[in-house]
Length: 74
Image 1 (cartoon, rainbow, N blue to C red):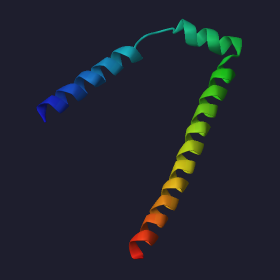
Image 2 (image 1 turned 180 degrees about the vertical axis):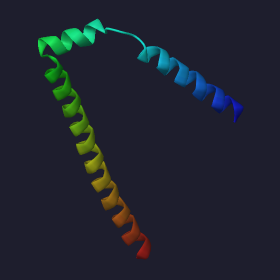
Image 3 (image 1 turned 90 degrees about the vertical axis):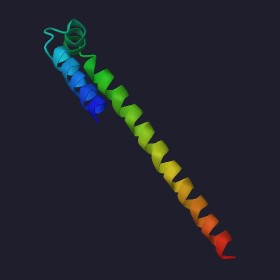
C-alpha cells in the first residue's frame, strides 16, 4: 500500500510540474494557424473508429454467446 501511495504522490508531483510551464509554442502555433480543427477532427475520427470497432465486437460476442448457450442446451 505504501508503494502505491508513493507512486501516486510522485505522479501527482510530476503532473503539477508540467502544469506550471508557460507558453507552449507548439500549441499556440497550431491554434493560431487554425490547424487545431484538423487535430480535433482527427481525434474525433479515431474515437469514432474505436467506438464502431467496440460495438461490432460486442455484437459478435453476443452472437457467439447465444450460439454457445444453444449448443449447451441441446
